[in-house]
Length: 169
Image 1 (spheres, rainbow, N blue to C red):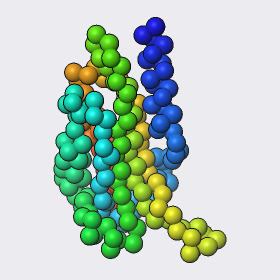
Image 2: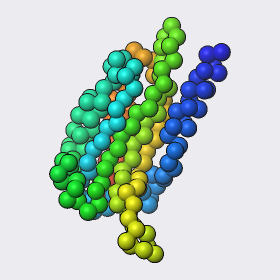
Image 3: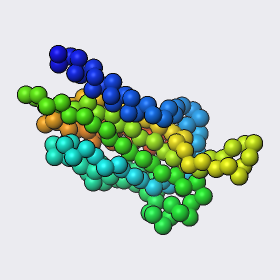
């Protein structure tokens, strides 16, 4: 029965993360060329996972630090409105807790960079859409959710590597 619940939880997380399909391929990497920085948004977390030790603020602080250490400017609210690309790095952690003797979570981590893009056929049509993404589904025991911050930092390293590959110093 527990095996069926695990499959169900992973299926739910995969469905939640697959609402928008974007590819973190060479084209996604190329879309990072020339960025002046990014505005960071970390979505609100499930209250259960915050009670178990993973907080929105700890994720935001860790991601900001990684970006700054890599030389990527973290834009303020005022700066984002002045930037014509309006690049937003969006971090989302979706979690479902299974309450058993050893409570565990099925967790989806979704990191996307949104920018303004336009249609070639009509440049007046502009979208704010994801141009780069990284998605991951993991499981963690409730007593180990704090370790997800390191998983998120590893995924941010993927973004940083792609950014630095097209924006050499």
